[in-house]
Image 1: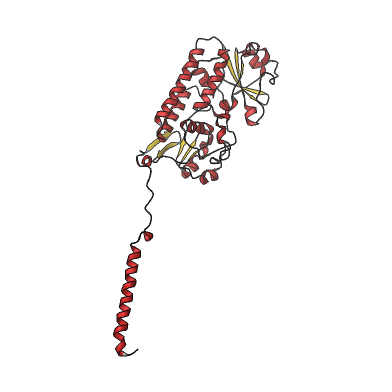
Image 2 (image 1 turned 135 degrees about the vertical axis):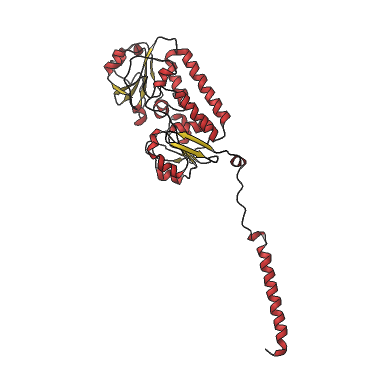
Length: 333
């Protein structure tokens, strides 16, 4: 390049550099280059006040409205169902008939077994709240590392002390968590009304009753101090026989024991039908000559209870209503 052309070349170079710099400034300020703003939280999330739930296993802090809830016990599923809260995951090994809509629901993930939930599936479900009972209590530490975990402090071994109040209190706690307190109050009031109606029907009646669990031909008795103790304590049913302290599955008894106790009313909970998915016992299939000699049998006051409500759940609003219906059948007929 000659000396005379160099000023023009320099001018052209400077003009090109200025143009490129202007383009760079224009791109940097254009909407395409701007990162999207963070998603705004919902009004409910913005207004959510932190809640601390104290239970037997510790204290659980809920600082946002839960969106994905895993319930590892059918009682907890029933609570959520009563409150209209979606269930993200639950065990599907023993789903009672009154919660059957969840069994094959594609949007409800299967968490394995009630007694032994699959923790990997729980983690994969990405919950922001996990609900458990004593049946899953040994997994509390691991579950709490996945998401806030609340233990339902219901005593499956002895329900005589404030069983219904414990259920109502848990219902109200979930109502607070999910901002459905008014609905929880209505459900609690409905349960109160059912309990009072049953108590009014039963309290002045002289009949005695025996609750037995059937398991492959063998029987266990559940008295005042048992998982069904509230039936005697809260509803006023009179026990046919004083019973020793019963464990989770009752006090083993013989057919002779039932015959000698001679209850006016006999409630039969068929565990075998639930656990082995067999047809439930009835008056025709229970071929036990000693039971047929009781006053209850002779007078047609043997109630074959809703085993799924009595055995799979028994500690939630809907299951309690079904149990009360079974209890009062013997007094209405």
